[in-house]
Length: 472
Image 1 (cartoon, rainbow, N blue to C red):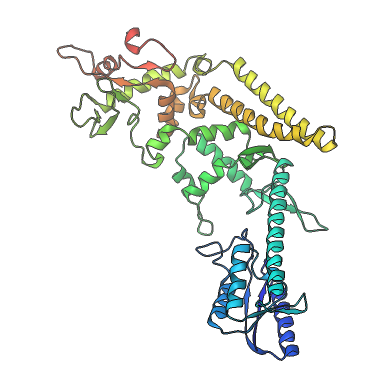
Image 2: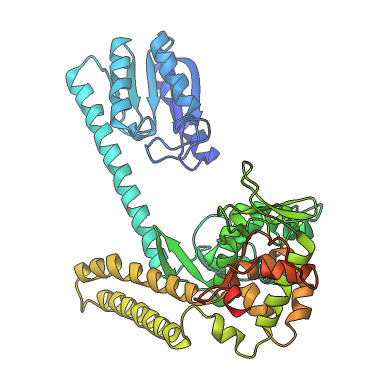
């Protein structure tokens, strides 16, 4: 009888696999079977296993070789430490049993101390039932794992996986179990500066280049992942919900949401920040047909190729726009006038947000204490996080863009001059709707800037019913 042993350990520990192979060899010697070679895998046998390769089970090359040996008639007996070491997916396990029965291959289970003849109905039933039980255990383990992840999220524990840049893990000195994470210096200072740079409108590519070192290269996707990660404000996301994390934040929430607003700006999606060269491309539109203006040579021109309705020299137009915007930002009440909602409305949103979060935490504590039912918590977990997300969105929308807020004040001109082009474009987009009309014939103006101002008559400040032409 030609016999082969199949050894598998889901965590891939070589010592455990070696022990299985030793027991298999001992069985071969005791039974007088001929050694036909052994097969091993370090991968999970259940449907939940995350395996390398192109498919979910691509990592179990050893088990694939076993199936091939059975179908080729290369072995007479397959030795397993226990039946679950084979296959925990019932559909494929039953198919494997059928292949063994067709090809006259028996299965010896060391833990059972017995060799099963698949031609025997009782033996086939025993291994088939083992397959169902093994699959059931895998399902239970998956449920427990998911509950564990959900429980860890609700408890505010940091997520698994790689440690976020700027933090380092902490472990229980007795058990070695991960218990949390703490801020790591100087990496956390890099994170803080990264958020500040993004909020100022500095292009992601430029930030990545400034952080790159030969031993630690950065790319834009890495910068963007950090800038989008709520872990830096001590927030844990799980299944679309957010939970307060039990670790120290690296950046404050105001800066974090400023960055989200910058990254979500439609202007960034229209034009790549690293390629922006002109102040008004895609922002100014043709007052005749509504198409945006492109920068062509030294002019802004309607992008409607059939008509090219309007064309205006770039330098005087940009000079007029800059003059108007700086004057508006220099006003004493500039910030208050630019708020989309009143400070009272924003405070009301923030107050309700704190109330809803406190209510949810109180329900969780009372359920843990046994004074409220689990059904009450399930209802709260369904409804309250949605309201929390809505309020956070309203608060973000109630604030003005960070680039605009940082530029307002008596020294607006100096701040405008020092700002990046991306930040300047953000201010233009947040403040006004720019529409350029056709030039009038036969009309004399003092200079080209006055010509540009007259052609901006249909433009308006956001939130203002009057156009700039109404003020002339």
